[in-house]
Length: 512
Image (cartoon, rainbow, N blue to C red; front, side, top):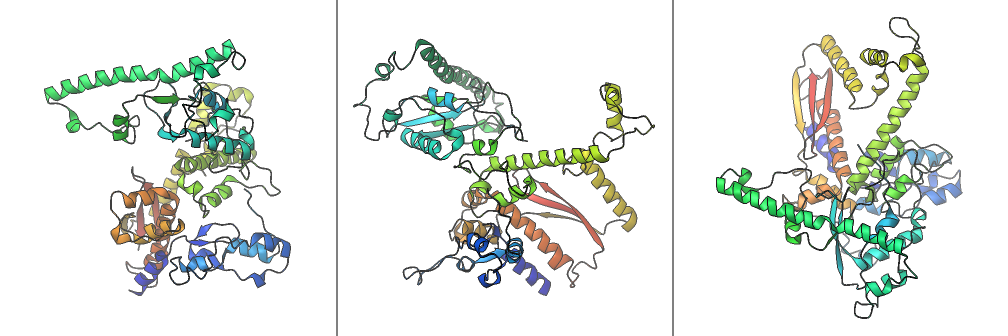
């Protein structure tokens, strides 16, 4: 029972302790109280690093009814920043995905010109205009869209050269449809030549051409659905089967009737580009995360920063812009794996043997021969660099050999266990996510299907960190504790997997 109490105490707190230097949201065992008198070697560095930005100080109004958690009222510092500041120096961090460049200037030019602040524009973002499916479908306010674009031009250096036609008319909040002239009158010969008009007409026609085809598809689909319902063989009682081409919100798709929707595909005619060969790609691809275009991974620094150190700091930051965006999560995973593969490949090229298993020297002519390359692949010499990359065949081959070696040395495992995540029932996970967002929530009053799912989906990084913390505490404070609830554990091995809904679980071998 004492071991169980220790386990529950370890998993009670979430990553709500913010480091005053690096602004990462950490667990209690990863931080310590910040005592400013300990850092005296370099006062200039200490003054710029100890920000105190996320320390809440109660005033006269909120002192009586303050709902801010107790950990937010104290200043904390992580162990890494503590050691650097105590030495008088601080290494500050300033700062499968396919990257396809988008023609932002072209997209801005083909958007319809709405003059009234009250008018709404429904936009579909597609990969290609001829596709019926879409990536995003949202309703935007034209005035807010233009205001955001103008602000992006002011603060973001990569978008500073974008020009917007009729800037004065589009951004004038007092201009209405009645006061403004027609679009045809404004498009005079002095502003647009014949080629520009033809180009704009072509793009607008391509963007709106999908409406007729969509209507035809809908009519034919309704006819086919009616025939199937008459025959009595319609699957799932008329519910459309889930697929990647089905919209997320079917009701919104049905109610829109696909009329008056403007479709854009800014990256349709462009080829994929490499992340490491395109400067400032991270800032251009994620303008919400990098509104000023600064502090990205590819910036030059006195001390080189690898993706494996850069992205965890971004995702664990108390600022949730990075952790909330699932596209940025996959982008970070892709860049990290590509960097690891490139680095591992370079090491293997330096330490690799220049001879084959039968003693022949590997040369340029051998690598150009298809049969010789196949022999190198079969002998595992060509894929040895992928061993450190988690999830690759070479990685799992090495892991399988390690597991078989444990079975030969230790014998048959005593237990085979499966631990699944029940994040819907874990109050500390929901509470930690809302605490990071500066809110207090009553777990008992939350709805199962909507509220809890939305909270967990709003920050998948914290959800996964809480699960990892629970697994660590489960083995350290319970299974491997002196209490020995299942016996004296000699060794263990487990593998982490994810279900289709994204929930993690582990399969474990335990030798007792």
